[in-house]
Image 1: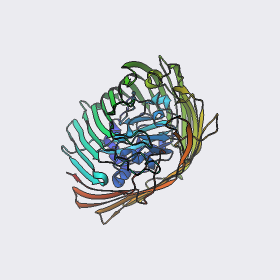
Image 2: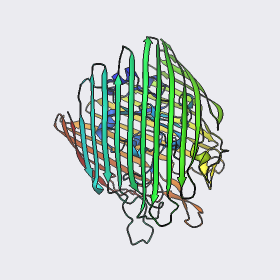
Image 3: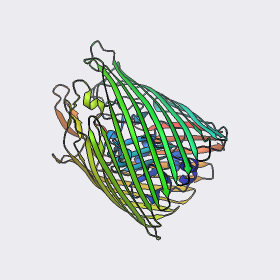
Length: 615
């Protein structure tokens, strides 16, 4: 199910995003189009925000998109990050890097390890909200997030070195080499993260002994090689490796001195894209990935030891036909997943499943109106055959007034872990499904101002949850309003505001879904002074969240709440010379008690300083 920033998008990505308010997007229709020419609810976090805010982790930028909230069991190092896209969980949204899915088939819900992501040349992030299975298949139940790295450079050798150091002995090193010679281009990078860390678990009430810090290390290696052997063709090879190690606690309120987790993620992708004639382009791709994780407890007796090993092969064949005002896309995707699992009580066991799907899309592109219709037929041995659809339309007046609407269905097959893991698996699980609609009114003044207000409503059925085993627990409904405004009247400064109100409930009990705040928002901006100084800042807000906690003896469940908070982050940089930039940034500058998962705390104000050398 791979999708890349194709030939024209890759070569023109930097120029396109400089327009800022109407960038080229590649995720909305699986091929390049301008943001204003799609009726799908999509937000773009561009290179300007990425450069001037300078977050250590790419997942932090997702807070700048409406409809997105993040939950983390500890912010330092290896704290697991879960992204809720209009209330859909991390395993219910497809996450990609340059169009290559990165979900982990060995994890319980198939969610990716977002906390491990790091990039030297991140160009933009595209966030598609709503059911997107008609184009992307199983896993796009709640939407799609695509992290896109920068396209080729005209220089033969363009190295970039970034060094950052901060609280808790936190070190971040990133070295990237990029260049192009004639028909060949390359982009390779390596990174190292380490921190002595703070305790992710919250000290128990009345405890006189502080919990031990949770140390963390992460090694990242990535590379992308591209060859254009003939006009209109692109051969590309991409590879990534992540290796991490972190110490853990026994849940939210119990310390541990000998519980550790190690994980590796290796992936390789090969793609061929060719345009034989002006009206026809096709693309072939194959992706392979492997995820291994080990939880190890050195205690004399422990049930915490486990080993997970997941592999995935995936491929796609897509054809795009450009007939002027009429555009067609059609193709098929396939995926083969396998996992092996063992723990203190269960011997090594394995399972696998295959998914195959075909899709088609028609796009009508008129002067002021665009409309699209897409459908997919997909299935697996466990889930059977499933059909999904999506419709979208957008109309824009010469005055800048813009109206759009979209709606469709989606599905997600049960994961191998949910189906077959010893003791807790349930081979009888049904697939999760969703129906979603949204409508938006907005105003666009190119290169100056963009505003939109979107109403959304979606219903999830057959949701899979865990009690003493995995079961289908019923249906839930998410509805609300998203607001987004961005202004960029002058190259020297820009600003943006987002706000989301969401009512996410279980339809059977009418209870609010956990860890989905009703109110979230952000205000962010940047300014450049005297050609050498730049300042970027963001202020994020999250309302109260419902959560649950369990009695350690009886496992009785209690509903609890995490408090609302404001989170202020800022970054200032100074160009010593054109190639050398010094920067200083702070996180949680208001020293708020940020907690997005009950029992896991934020360590308070964090400061980081560093240097970036770009030759």
